[in-house]
Length: 150
Image 1 (cartoon, one colour):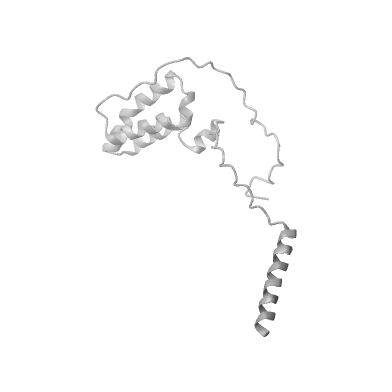
Image 2 (cartoon, one colour):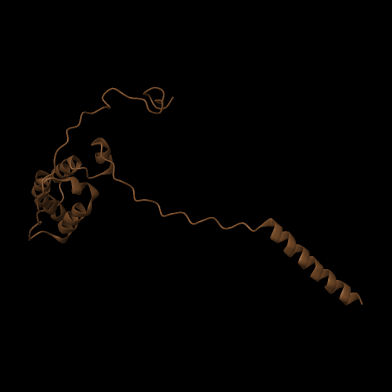
């Protein structure tokens, strides 16, 4: 038993509430908005991080509008952090899948990059050749020893 929640589930077990209904939304084309001017370097870096994050390729206009509304709060937080600003930023970013835990809760999984191909194994020497090479080496040693005794 682990923890206080009973025994560990069997692999492939289906739990109540784990089968979420999903609705497919069609993505419409739109331009990613620009952050604008007057923001601090830290806020611009925050915006660039969001632009580069993998989940943003699924964002629609309202998601970007949410980030744009959040930018002034992020900027204010960087200049004078307060618990209230931190809380609001954390909650809003959570809804957009900012952390690994947020993405897991939302049922999102970031695809892992493919591992580099494994190097081919080192070729093993042919034992027949090794035997021949060993015999030739022994013969040379024997000749050398016999020649030295004469």
